[in-house]
Amino acid sequence: MKRLYQHILAEHLSANRQMAFLSGPRQVGKTTIARAAAGENSYLNWDNQDDRATIARGPKSVADQLELQQLRQQLPVLVFDELHKYGNWKRFLKGFYDTYADAAKIVVTGSARLDIFKRGGDSLMGRYFPYRMHPLSVAEVLSARLTDGEIHPPRRCSKEPLEHLLEYGGFPEPFLRADARFARRWRSLRREQLVREDLRDLTRVAEIGQLAVLVEILTRQAGGLANYSSLAREINVAVDTIRRWISILQALYVVFEVRPWFRNVAKSLRKQPKIYLWDWCSVSDEGARFENLVASHLLKAVHGWTDRGLGDYRLHFLRDVVGREVDFLVTRDDQPWFLVEVKTGDRQLHAPLAYFQEATKADHAFQLVRHLDPVQKDCFAVRTPIVVPAVSFLSQLV
Image (tube, rainbow, N blue to C red; front, side, top):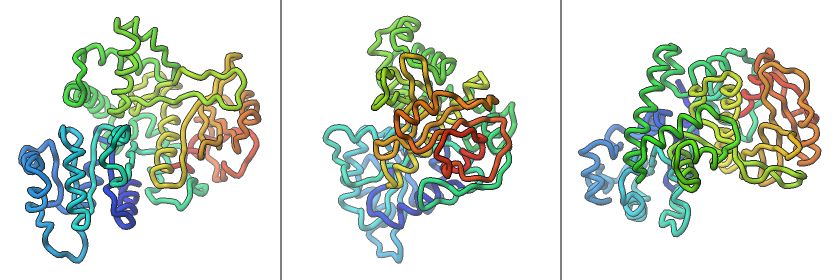
């Protein structure tokens, strides 16, 4: 199926000289998208032994193999796949880009967060733009086209895309196969490969077994507040070790954190994040899985809007010591934009929505209800707290 990221990558390649860094979880479709943009002979994969030898010999070796010295009508698109596994990948890319940026368009993919290397003296500063690739969403299933702004106009749809994503997940292969037995086997194998290969190859963690236990606990507690002390006691490691391991799991696109928003909110929580999974189908509880799916859709939206240069968007939640809570808050350029509360079937408006909208001055406050039939109306035309069909709201995102 056509993916949104094909258009995003094409937009980047037509408008920018900088490299495109395309990162995302294992088996989300990065290689398929990148190979579609490049010719068969312009694709180098670090996991391929021959390609690895070519890359290891240096930029000139790659340029010679791809004949970059040859004048062409259009610049070729060159893809380096899984290059982050190479210990000297930053130095290699800096040398290659500085020498051959005028001879080729460069795409770099990876199943680990390439943007984490922004910290400190980043020798690649100014030489790349990052793009974070996500699983399929309701909006992308309906249409892979890009919008000029953030929000899609209202679209006619059924509840089927949402229910299909809840059952099979957003990773392309199980989604398209739509077979429950295949999806379970695929998910089990993916988890095993992640622990056996990615964690072993890309980190220096010796206690892989204990880290795997942490993943299982976080899966059971998806959407809950992360209590590092409790996790440390359960796994029998130090609290700082838990923090480090969760950072590793975030870097490898296993989990993501949603942090509390506390500005202009009296007596709000300030420290403990909530943790969700990139693969929401790993969550067994139906209500928690639906909340995780919505969190993933919102994260995909804020990443997509930010990566395309529309602004700086972030995802938070709201909770105070009195017990009032709203599941999510999306900010735009550090200002509250809209609130989201997630419900499976409850149509009674969640009282804290109005309270927190007044406190934060957010433009919108939505209560998403999974089992409501869709309506073809613009959710973002309403300024007061409102109950909306979940599929209608999600269809207007990315």
